[in-house]
Amino acid sequence: MLVVTVPLREGFNHETQEFVVLDGFELKLEHSLVTLSKWESHFKKPFLSDTEKSDEELLWYVRAMILNKKVPPELFLRMSKQNIQDINDYIADSMTATWFNEPKTSGKSREKITAELIYYWMIEFGIPVEFEHWHLNRLLTLIKVCSHKKAPPKKMSPAEAMRMREELNEQRKREMKTTG
Image (cartoon, rainbow, N blue to C red; front, side):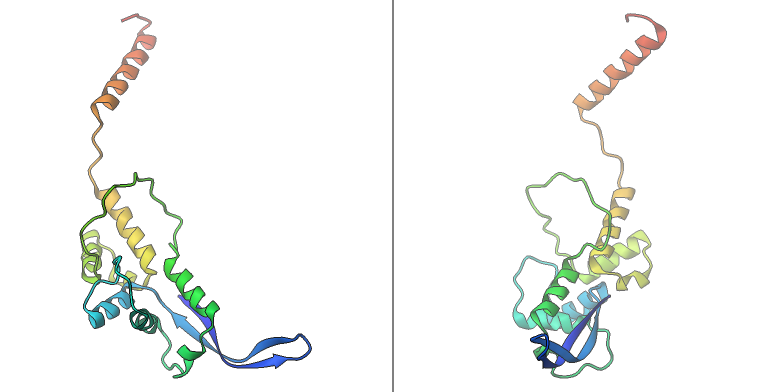
């Protein structure tokens, strides 16, 4: 969850010659599968795509992220550039220490990732439904970990198999004190 303070009323401090927040609103936000699902239900298209989002779509997504019960109507007009940057940074954050060492593939998967597909993956891997409130990037990382762990072991290339046999033969020669 991200908490940002949106300045609703500002004043000027003559001693420090700076603008100061006199009244702020703590906005609580959640970038999660629940939020993604709300957005896709409204716009009827995948959120996780390379398609450019309009300002209206992005603002709607931020509104869907809100956890507060009551939000002042002028809140979105009072958001600072820093508030917006904080929200963008939060959405982009991986929220995990897990990383993958995978070769870059030339083509991207053509499968459209939607909320329903993510829910399917959760069911397939036995991930509790409560995790729908996790940060979306963290949930997707968990799903990827589950996928890697359940995948069959990768087969060795013929060159790798030959190298492994040669190493094993050399080890046996040393143990048996023979030349072959």
